[in-house]
Amino acid sequence: MPMLIAKELSVERSSQQVLKDVSLQLEQGEIHALLGGNGAGKSTTLLTFLGFLTPVSGSVHVQGRDVSEDVGAARRAIAYLPEGATLYAHLNAYENLRYFLSLAGTDTDRQVLDVALDRVALQAEAREMRMQTYSKGMRQKVAIAMAILREAPILLLDEPTSGLDPAAIDDFNRLVRDLAEGGRTILLVTHDVYGACHVADRIHLLHRGELVGTFDRPSDMDRIDTEAVHAAFATHAAA
Image (cartoon, rainbow, N blue to C red):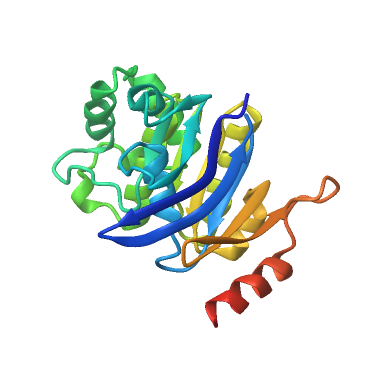
């Protein structure tokens, strides 16, 4: 059973069409990337899977359920990391994780938290420091750890590498591949061609709300052809 399906999805926001007849399908353990410039419709796609936006036509399904008919089930199956996730500045990493995870009824044992923070490579000495002392990249690592700790079968990640340095981006890409190999299904939004080609099994190129290209990772390669994707991205960006 596919984990995520968008079928001929069209969405409007403020009476403006943002998505037009977009179709995609993710199987368990796959990593897909939505690639495109600002206003392409990437974040709108994620919000529609979460039931925050209602299609004007078409449909979205999460684990076989129509989101419009059972939004609660869809959200329970998904861990969502928005771009620029809000964390409390006066709390440390542990306190932020405990608070937000308690809202989802997720285990907050200290050892469990440390395992997740180890996976995102947040320094041990920083974990009891207040968030107001963190860099953007450090805050992003805590937010990624939170998404992992939800233990949901599906991860929706909106610009997850924003604020991370190149070494941290490489760590993130390895983490995402490990999660997929463990059975998680991951849909991430990015405008980073290089990163998308290195982590994704399939890239969906969006331009002005339309799906204008799909690129698959060849079975004998460890990444999608960066030059082909970059050329397509640049062509549509210049249009």
